[in-house]
Amino acid sequence: MTYTHRAAVLGSPIAHSLSPVLHRAAYADLGLAGWTYHRFDVDERALPEFVTGLDRRVWAGLSLTMPLKRAVIPLLDGISEPAAAVEAVNTVVFTGDGRALGDNTDIPGMTAALAEHGVEKAEWAAVLGAGATASSALAALARICPGEVGVYVRNPERAAEMRRWADRLGMVVRIADWADAAEALDAPLVVATTPAGATDALAGAVPEHPGALFDVLYDPWPTPLAAAWSARGGTVVGGLDLLVHQAVLQVEQMTGRAPAPLEAMRAAGEAALAARHG
Image 1 (spheres, rainbow, N blue to C red):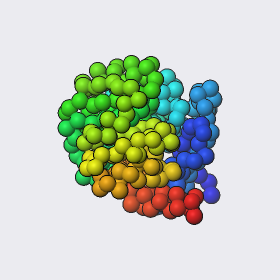
Image 2 (tube, helix red, strand yellow):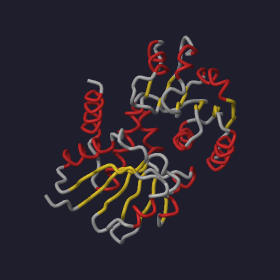
Image 3 (cartoon, one colour):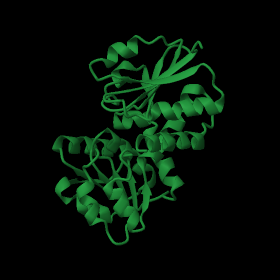
Image 4 (cartoon, rainbow, N blue to C red):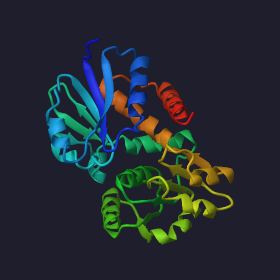
């Protein structure tokens, strides 16, 4: 088969990514013959050569994960307002006239995933972590949380970045030390954006009647924190929910076809995760 449209996810490491599974499932459901989606291990140093070397007559778009969400910005012809607000691009679309435009589908993906689980508003919230995903979480919370957001960080430099993003978003943010992260669990909505293992010690601090937890990890799943949260009857939104919802938006932007098949993509992701641990 001759592939007429190409797309891929870039990052380092990248072997774990479920994005190819989700996007290929969408192509199959939409009947898009000739579309292909792969993963490439690309770090910040290799990114410029990779992006400039693409044939934009064939390439439809790119998905970006760590550590490339900020590094890609100087290579683009323009970025959306949400992506600019948090300095994080996870989606690049190549237009018919050859431009490369960046967007952040993590932000609307988060709000869509929360809404799907009945979380459409939170009077106040807490964010665990301060990386690129945390910045997107802050932007998502700006849409549904009118009150204060507590951000629990381990790195003072990241704390300064979170304050800058909060100012751009018009939010009230309180920066707190990671040593006090257990107090965050009392918030009506907690968003955990940290790497695997970072919140495990907090599982024993889940309150008796927890609110909602959005844990952006999806493998391994459930995390100890998510399992403890669910056991106490709290609402849990997982990383696969986010991955699917943001990928739906990417497929729509890259292919021009909407709506993308959310349920087919979710089923493919669940099957792939089950196969990994079967």
